[in-house]
Image 1 (tube, rainbow, N blue to C red):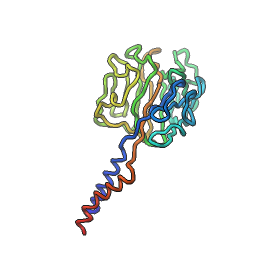
Image 2: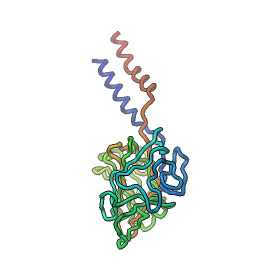
Image 3: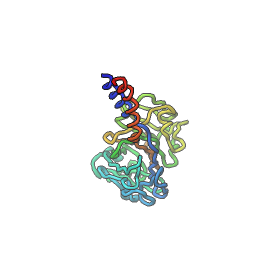
Image 4: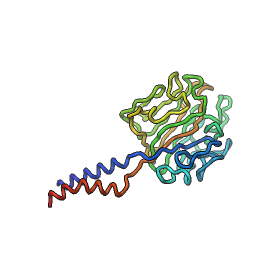
Amino acid sequence: MKLFRSLVLATFVLSNLSIASAEVVELIFMRDTAGNGSTSVNVTHGFSEVATPIYTGFNTGTELGQTWGGTGLNIGGSAVTFTNSAMSDYGGITTGGAARFIGDQNGMGMRNSADYSANSERPWMIDGQESFTWNADKDLYFAGVGFRPGFGAFLGQKELSVSSPDWIGLAGVSPGSGITFESGTGTFKITNASGSVALDNAVTVNELVGASGPQLDFSAASGISFANTGIGAEEEDLALTSVSLGALAVPEPSSASILLLGLLYPTWRRRR
């Protein structure tokens, strides 16, 4: 029985070690900005460092169900491929081909197949009811987001919501000024209200959850979602310049073996 309890304890400790963080990688969405290939990677056309860019020009980009990333986008030591698992256009239409990612040197936006020009829709921005979900082929964690300069204009209008089902009920969250967390939906709402930490056109994970807050893990199955939830006809638009992500690290086999032996040896010795 004591040996069994030791095995259970060892399994528990090893499983919790597997959630340790790896190095953060910044995904760059501006076509004229090169990454360094390790801690920053350009995923667009132009200075692209990946096998499949998220967009290849101002008029062409990936749509619902299509993938991007792959070779060149190494997070946690291995290549990561993303799938656009959900997308919504300016009017809320979610069918395939209704929206696609595009961008330029100023950041990434969404273009719609329908004509919403009468509604002040901007194809180079994320506005209206535009939203998207990315599912990676491995478990990751969210570490921050960057905006096109100008996010601080028209105070009280712009808002980006970032969510994952894995964040529902997340405890220990202490958001910075201008950020709210809805525990019931696992959603962070980033606004440009006066005094917001986002007025510098970027939000870090510490500004989202607090200096001692939890890690924002999201599994390959759950994914991560971004949605424009701002108000107003013209002031709500925004564009993404970067998203920072990290992989969940697994302990080295040698370290795991040493830990397991250390936990089991006292029980084995008593039984002897």
